[in-house]
Image (cartoon, rainbow, N blue to C red):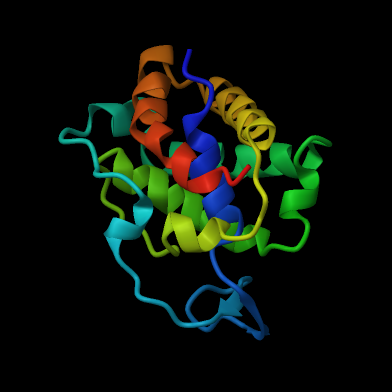
Length: 167
């Protein structure tokens, strides 16, 4: 089983923007962020060419459940909870779901920041990355995502580790 790739996506999204004091007008429940260029290219990988894996994740609703579960678990995970404390978790869950949906060839666009800018100066280490991947695998298992579909997503995200891990 691939153990590293999703940490990049989750860590990237945990810090998807620098929060401002006022709430977001576009996304209720989220803090506003400083403007940046939005692009699907920020998702960190190209999407799959067919929707089979998207369907294996039970569509947008299943992807949102996976996103919510992995972030909730990461916040409770003593190995990595500190990384998430100062971040807008509503935004993290939304943008993570967008990223996964987009990469799985679902009907979504990714609106988060690029992976490099998002993780800059967070000091993420391989152990942090690995812990989040374990939490993601737990969330995908909880959703009943088949092992093969899990690995397809993880393989798509694996190259992001080089962008996310700083030490």
